[in-house]
Image (cartoon, rainbow, N blue to C red):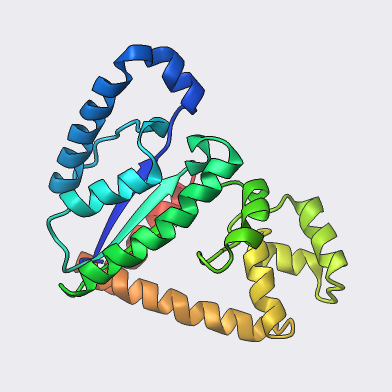
Length: 229
């Protein structure tokens, strides 16, 4: 994972909460946030910064790309709870602008051998409303996991003939995994084989990046399982 830089930014309070609590101090606070963000990015520290909707996604992307010194690695900016920036129309406008900004910044990073991508997390309700309008601008992944009853209901609507309990245990209620199974005509064995290949690659990458032996890796896994709660 040394080839990657992952920066996580979580939006905190809603815009109305921020505005009411800061009022005329808002501009000074924005300057303070920018300084804190600059320090965190340049030092790649783990300090938590409560951004709130004071900085738009476009501003965040610009600042991150401006402050980041190392452009030779693959940079991933994760933005959580971005729906808090305002109304749905504002979120839509932000995403449309951002998709263009990221393409330009990514091109600049690629000149140095790196890349720049963003991942935005939001609720399923907002994703459903935005997807038809912005489908050509973004890659959409269904990430959420359904409760067991709702998961079974979705399988019935898909006329699935595979044992529901088995699919529940394999996927944990993930519709994205069900979508992958649909693409291969519900071939569960093929789906499992693909997952095994992915897991093997992840394990090899983890062992290589941590510079540990297979035995040490197995010990770490066992220790995690023993203390899973």
